[in-house]
Image (cartoon, rainbow, N blue to C red):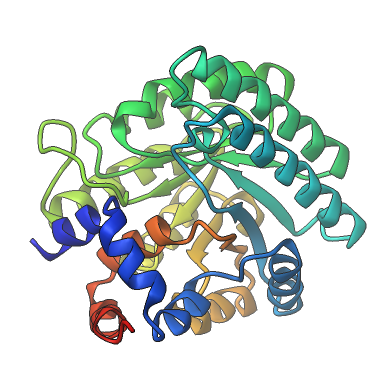
Length: 309
């Protein structure tokens, strides 16, 4: 119930206005978001890389319904990729990209507009010597996102994608996408979805995650294990060993601000660990979904709301 409430709050402009004005919100934002500017993102990236970590940078924003804003987002990603290259960080940092931020939801030709913008970003990533991973959003966009992935990989074969274990379809999608050269980030999922398409109980989601991970580990692609759950981290390590994978043939991924000591511990042990690093002004939906994933943070959130002035 608590998770459903938080995911509903992610779509509420009224609650967003309250939280944005709350003085304690800054501490929560700083914990999970690198900052609002490109410079903030680059500073955080350098710090993470200095600790032996890899980075996937996400310029926050989604569900764009304005063509000008979609173009601006694509331009911002090109600028970000130029900055990554100029800083000599291409070996360590890639970008994560939501197609809805590029206009996928536009009423006329949204999917094609988003695909064209994504091509521009992928070309900039190739020029910078790094990669792009397409983020997955709610289940209504899954087919369109996977369709865009197939088209982009024709020209940019290293484009990665995200699959969400709480969707009932995902084990089948893993089988389809576990081929040679694929890069798949497997996460649990952070959107409010109906029971007809998604598992609701945490135990069911965890079991689905393990089934999907087994498919990816025994496939020919590159699994990206996105979880903070110690049990799943241990299971992933055992599966990798069983599948005969070396440590450079898969990686763990964790969110900025979540279990940073564990991120460094795994990296020190010789594992590849990539931190999902968000930045930008559109932090509210991202923040509330992080709270839904980890309700222990709710007390901080409620204090922020109660402190509005």
